[in-house]
Length: 442
Image (cartoon, rainbow, N blue to C red):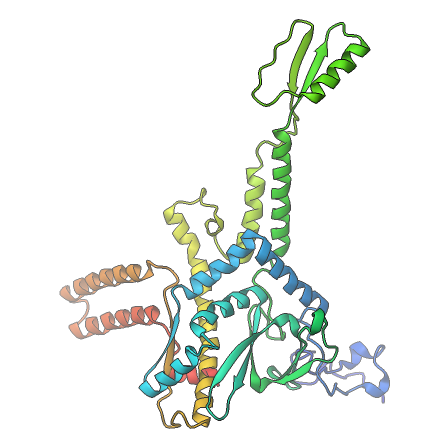
């Protein structure tokens, strides 16, 4: 089979060379020297282990292990993850339905002793930020419609098989949990995608796996830890000293005798020494020339804060910002936490929708019931509600002034005020509304 000189680099209309590894279109010109002639123009029949945008399995596994170790042992890494959970969830999350029957069905799933989503949601958010993804498996009892959810450790999900034509449509997951005495099955078990929901963050469109929030800052966390250890060692050395004793006219045997005496009974801190003009005592301390390295530590913390997407005063560095500056610096972080809330809202909406489907299939919930519900969070920042109230009060005064001066009719002013008030209410109790939840969850 000869390759035409004008053969395209990839099939017309295909924008990417590798659709996430699900199949590979062979670019004839670029691969003519490396692909056997009989293989030109063909694609793989099965999924590849990963895509061009996914890290290789060993690197991805090591990243999960490093992120978990940093979370357990590094205070800054722990703060980055925990503060994200605190801001995203705050005082908790609720799922509220319009229909009382649907609400009871949601409560059965939400407060099931094996689910306890009011507590599990914190683990989901924490591990989502820590590992960059969550695999949540649903176990359904078809007779009762009961759904029990469990989080699968991403470390033991070895592979994801997707539709050859659509990387965003998973087909099954290769699950290899540890066996007896820590051994891992060589084959594992393929779990169909109908039983597992995969939620990933920090990934591009052509990748299957998510990435930890700690991934960009892990090297700097290690450097900062090493820098602190060096400072501890240096400060310990700075506090150490020794006595230099000079004996005028002493013979060698006299020096040896005095050395044995002082080694047996060295002077204790705070003790007073008495000696004649023959002896001269002098305390000697190391001069390491590293008294002030504050800027070095702050530079490392700034790199960590930048990679984590939080201002430095979120990492206990409050000496360089006043209240007004801190409020302005915190706005991007609050926006980021709000975006994470939207993602977590979809996670919970999907789980609730799965539970409602199971209860409808088991006959415990009518198929004609109004299944609209909203998932709502508390405010990321406690004083945001007061700030919106103050902003609405100022807008009310401005609208009233405009109406009095004839710049707006009463009807226009009323519509504008209600629009502003409605936007404030929407932000305050922003939840995925009924129809949106159902569409997004299915």
